[in-house]
Image (cartoon, rainbow, N blue to C red):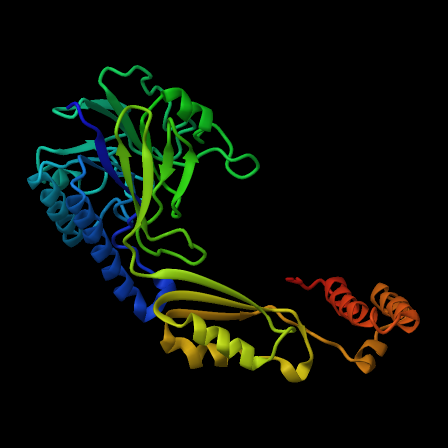
Length: 375
């Protein structure tokens, strides 16, 4: 092939995930995962990609139900019918005892263009594309990088890889099982497709780009980068460009509202502005507020629940203690002495200084009581 190469990278679909935290809505989100995987395949076909790279955790379990395996097989067959290659690895969730993704026997029957990689690193040439694909499935518990023993030579014009695991991040992800960015660069691949992280993110930039595609659909709270697959265009070796394409139905929103800076009407307006029946929304109330302005978070959550797919309202506010309440603190305690010192400073302060000092007093009391203060 004298032209360029076009890829689609999808990972961490987690078909069959229980979504217990969603209660009765869990079944609806499980169906959404299935629909989103179909949309990813639709996109691959519409974009006429040459290869679909599946970076692991297609299923949430190494023993997926027959219905889910049939769904995956049907979608792989759609790609095979159009001559689109599929290179797939197992992730830590769906790796079977033989090292392949659960249901591998059925998936292999999807067509001659389907390649499944096991726990041992393997390089496969792709006929007609002047391409080699190197892959390795997850091997949980193995104290070695998934990239260990990968070849560094380039026998054909293009070279890409696919695997599943964590990339080294100092102070966060360390140890021998982590993939180091320099290790990725040393492979000299035109593209490395990774699975494991659920938010789309670049790990190593061009000319040896490595990316997490993230989950194509929302899976859990605090995943603002989920909902995408990646389209990769490689006109020539070392010239890949990566474009995130949204295929997910749900999206995650997080609102942090300072309840001390506004009233309940401001909270309600923020919820109305963010209303979206396809959104999973976390609302965190913060700040220091007087007793008469404390918001009933549970009641607000119930009132606005039908405006979102899922809504959580959590309160981290702290009560503003009046002078009578502060005066009851023991004089011989650290807390009591702090209050007395602050009252002395307030008595000497100008009118312009007083609001800041009063807030500092309240925040200081909360901290000395061992409460978390979010600003």
